[in-house]
Image 1 (tube, one colour):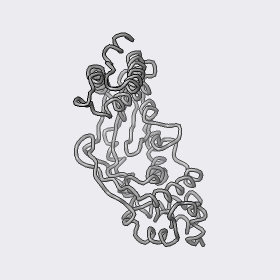
Image 2 (tube, rainbow, N blue to C red):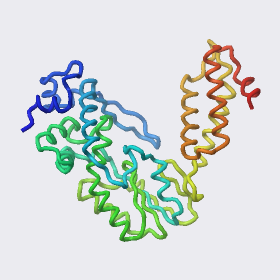
Image 3 (cartoon, helix red, strand yellow):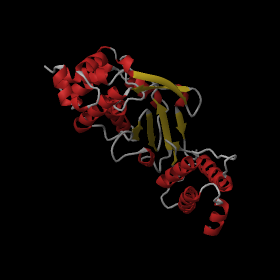
Length: 322
């Protein structure tokens, strides 16, 4: 039987500042007292609720995550929250397809329950008492919270059996299947038109359901974008809308950042956001000349600007470097 002291020892919790068995007991009894909740806007409208754990719980979850990473495997079909995998690889798995179906699991973390986490940890050969305590530490109001470091990995572990079933269905239909978090993708020469219904039936057995507003079937000749990567041309490319937005951001930065003064202050995060877009572009298209050139110029110019202060004119610097 795993006592609280033994659990704390297994997770090396005694090294955490301000940790005590009383705090661990309080978390297990009512973890809601150890979270701060707030909302952030979604890209496509609406708000997403984030539950951010207080430092002591965050550190406990971090230690738990280290143990879970060593013991819990994820399916070969999962591309999010996995070492060595990313959204670009997820999209690239579907290159060359004639038809593409993308579906979204609604409220993915919020539909993954403590009981499911407990069972998944038992399946990973953890003892029952450890699995029980870990499932309490990692959940809020009985489900995985958006904001806890353990939620991404545990969502993959819980969904692993469903990945297997969906992959077998795809194999039977002679199509491909991959998943990036709550985004499921199926591709092949021909997608059965009743496939969303079959998917919904399978995942509903574990308490999940599809978001009908995010189901999309793309046939031959249609624009195909998966997790922000365009595969329409047969190679992975940044979507045109993203490229246009990034070029506009670069142009605006080149035009305005050199005009900074005490009374004319540019958004201090503008450079970081723009460089982030360029870096993502280069992840998708490593040999893109424009993106590579702008990254080099803006990086050098920004560093020079920081050194010389607001009197540095970036426009002249870029003109001399072009």
